[in-house]
Length: 188
Image (cartoon, rainbow, N blue to C red; front, side):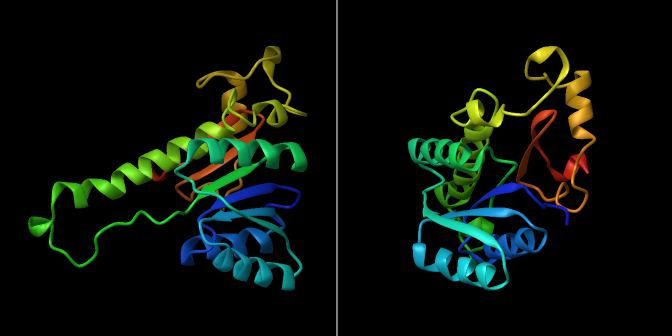
């Protein structure tokens, strides 16, 4: 199992993509922490995962609310002993079916603002020095006893320890020996 003994937070887990990711992560052995704005949809996904033998918890968290994200991540990191994966699949509230030429600048830029804001907030919460870093640092060993910087030996070693199947999914943040990494299509 690719994610056995890994702790994964999934934002937007009640949606179609987030729910599918949650189910896939559960099949691979991850302990899941599902978040979203609507508990009913989260609980439906959690029931499916639990019925299949997975370990899952749900919480109502708005991934665009910085204090809520930071508090939730700190709580999960403390109770679970750390966080290995953070996956953001929230809806971007984009306009569908309107030709670009008829779209307003606000309609065009709104999902871009949501995407960049939520990716920033959720990545920052699990980053070294973020609200969860005290718990994430437990058991992490690296060169010279400090968090590695991009381009350094420990950073490169950590990047070499990807989970092959999930490391190629854009929006996945994983902790490892090399610290926080954000995978994007250009890095595959």
